Image: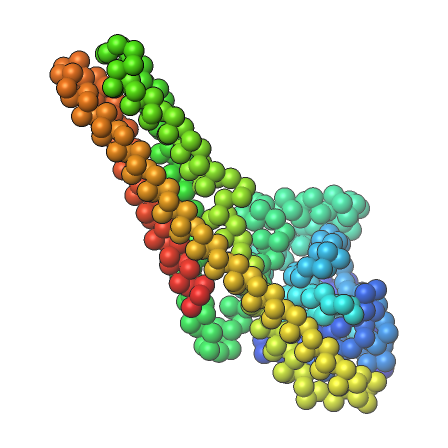
Length: 405
């Protein structure tokens, strides 16, 4: 029987395993191992007698920063899926890298692991080396290590750990699926098409805010000039007042639409990411259930019927989450389509007021040319905003088609 060792795995060779080897372990709420599949036992090098009933940290090593486990634990305690690159320790002191996905369940936690091969994995390893050295060498606290972890992720372009783990799971799943099979090629094509649409929407919203900002002072200038060209209460002044009050409300709506924390596009993007994350999680849960069906674990004290029932329940639970998140993304894509359409229609209405004012200014001859020039500037901004809102609507249609397809 192999004896565990605390020798740092970074000084030893990795245990090789195949990209197709998917393995899992299951713990109770305390993190005590209840079961696992044959691949888990073989790769770990521990006997089943050492694994069952042992805390899961039996396979933990110091190349994975404590901060990573702290973040993962916080997520699963909140009943959320946690994903992280982890370097595990074998019974003879060697190590192996995995991308671990931990799915909470009423009975405990299911940890599914795959071999990481994506470009993001190399960046994560470099980040881990720095953090582990600081934890072990500089003796920084786990709180300080977590702060550094989040800062490093932010420098890589991730706003949060959740954004990072989503990118890691989708990236590794794509890399693995591409290497093993082309069955999911159409799925990745749809994802790419939707992401392209989301990026186009995001870019259009930035331009939309710029266009609205360029309009800020022009309505006021128009009103001031109008008041100088005709007596108080004249038609041009009245139109300027109507334009000012209407545009003020509309520009605020557009700003909220593009920038607000509750903006539909922001919520839609988050919902789509969640639906992709849920789908991949569910595909891996399904694969582990199918691949473990033939494991002969009864002789090691693991009841195969109990295991299949557990895995089936987990699969059913996350299938429901996948379905709900996809429906939410679809609903938000439709909402975005309608909102951009309504705002575009309101902008066309606002431009009608401007055109009426432009006609009225023409009746004033040379004097009216002063306000006419301002109205032409406003018209240019209107055309830009209307075109951007149409672009957002068109791309929302593309996203919706990809989500529902």
